[in-house]
Amino acid sequence: MKRTILNLSTAAVALLAASAVSAETLRWANDGDVLTLDPYAHTESLTSSFLHHLYEPLVRRNADLGFEPALATEWELIEPTRARFKLREGVTFHNGNPFTADDVVASITRMIDPDSRARGNLSAVTAAEKVDDLTVDLILTGPTPLLLNDLSGVFMMDKEWMEEHDALTPGNTTTGTVTYASDHANGTGPFKLESRTPDAKTVLTAFDDWWDTPIHNIDTIEFTPIGSDATRVAALLSGEVDVITPAPLQDTARIDGADGVSAIQNPSLRTIMLGLNVGDDELDAAPGSGFNPLKDVKVRKALWQAIDMDAIAAKVMRGKARVAGLMIAPQIAGYVAEDDVKPEYDMDAAKKLLADAGYEDGFTMGLDCPNDRYVNDEEICLAIASMWKNLGVDVKLTTQTKGNHFPKVDNGETDAYMIGWATLPAMDGYSPVRAMLATRDGEMGGNNPNGYSNARVDEIAKLAGEETDDEKRLAMISEAIRIARDEIAFIPLHQQPLAWAARDNVELIQFPDNYFRAWHYKVN
Image (cartoon, rainbow, N blue to C red; front, side, top):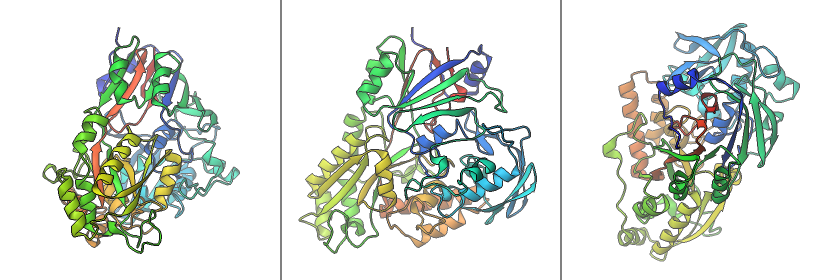
């Protein structure tokens, strides 16, 4: 008998809470490993999702993705540039240390360190000041309408533990900086780290002294990266694992037809797109050429127009992706439906554009893609490389694990690359404006290695970050997203579907941000 899939609703959570509690093991297989255990060394969603089991923020998303108190119980803006947070009493870290204001100050200071990879996710905070043991002030650059959105992704760490292990400054997956916190963890979250073998298995166990009342019945989480789609599905069907993320789209019907397992599919917030190197004087794949065709918007439009996204959506994505013309999904604040248009696929028109730009004989460029991060990422890039070769562009395609792909991208060592963006943790259109479109300067543009720069976009990134009138703020964000589309700062491809699969004895919620939150789940 097929189990009932619980979707995102308060009723679902109530059902979970009302059920009898018994300790169980949840065996979770993902197509790749977490990049690091250091909360501030990355901006990758799977890693953040995993670390939410170990670490907690001051405020968190509830089961409806609204905000609720976590390690802070209340907050207020006491000055335009000062927000005060009252901390929860009686919280302890996994090592038994009490959670206090000193830990918040040390965590915020570590988060906004110039060498923190996640620094851009808290760009409006300049400092944290202790008021008393359970009160902290955050010092802001100005009015910050998305402060709670940002803080929901900032995990609190133990100052004493960091001092003991010389980890007060953050690691960084882009620079390769590793600290004790990269492979060890000591948070306040519902689960604590039992063991970790990178690329093999990470085991978490329930934290008995968690401050919150558990609604899950999970005693142990066994997380195993399984890159092969076929092996991951086989592990589920054989009962070796309980949940797989993602479930290969080509196998969802077969999974649904098998006894004891089900596929779970819903729309996703994540837009898959291609970044383009528009800043360098020549392309990495053509050293010595002395020119960079991607600086010409005609060339960028030709590349976009030569991608048959309808064919990719139908064949590679099995009809389960939504073709996109913008960097943000319809559910995200700042989305404007009439702006969500892309050039129609037309290879002849694309070739004419390329010739008009002076490249009728084509050119050579690189295309970098992960093969373990997004749904059918490698297959999508193979299709695009073939289409671009038909355009006359000699594409040097590289596909590799996300652990190698993203540092290469962050360091600007690629001509074109695949990236997905779900606007997390903010879930607001300001996220890509600040992180991907603003000129990279240490405060903004943390995910803009492309050299893209537009004065009006930079102005919006500053103004919208402080605008408290939501109508005005969203109008500016929409304008910036529209400029990015017109200038083809990125080539949007599609919003990928969420596709998981689980054994029927697992009760779970599939959140549209693709976060795996096992403290809401049960194993029967």
